Image (cartoon, rainbow, N blue to C red):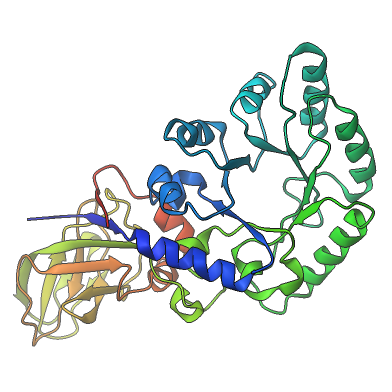
Length: 361
């Protein structure tokens, strides 16, 4: 009997990349595959997305793993480097790096005097236009550009970038505030620009500059609140499934699970699925969270356990032990599961554990 299985469709990944290119036909595409390819497998994702123009990662270890796997495309460190000693490795491996603070800039300048770097490092200068996370203040742009172009180990052709805080909220006026701030900060330069994440790629034409940086949409998930990826012609890449390991008839007023937090309102048939928070299924999934069994949606009932969940199959159920249960993916959008667990699809995808078996098709 098979238990937790994550099946990853590489053709769905490629389909979703093609959708990005249709949405932003004038832009180059940086496929963001940080956090182990949003939980889908870093190397497998990058190999499948070989028509992307670059890959974006958060940690230099992820970049090393891509190079070791023979990925020769542009790799951008989206958070930059954390230690000065990484600069030499960035140069040797032809990585590109984001610069978002004074410390990183000073360390690049110091490296220029101490290291022999044959090929200058390509730098993406991040400007904080209102996210208040990473990035230099708009008033610092001229100084940073001047110093970077004077730095011997930096390629003179920079990329200017920013990140939108509310792109996933349709008609949020703050998006226009940030776009205007970026335009004012960057208009004096002829460098390439990059603004759009997945949400902006979908809905904000002004954000589709020289580069777009899709992440979650590549994996078939819409970042727009209230939507699923299917509504944007995206295909779910991961389908997580397991099987029924118990089917039993119970009477009305039967408490279910730890604490008896759910009680059967009438006679019914309960099923137990071999999946739990030990596999990465969200523990805080509420009663009613959808599970797909034999072509129909049935509700999760009772608390999620480490290894099991219970579902209400209904009094007329014909389901049997061994039947497949889909927790999300084909036939059941992960956005619906995330909503019931009061979280986001990003988190659910990234938290699967090593107990889950993987299959790439």
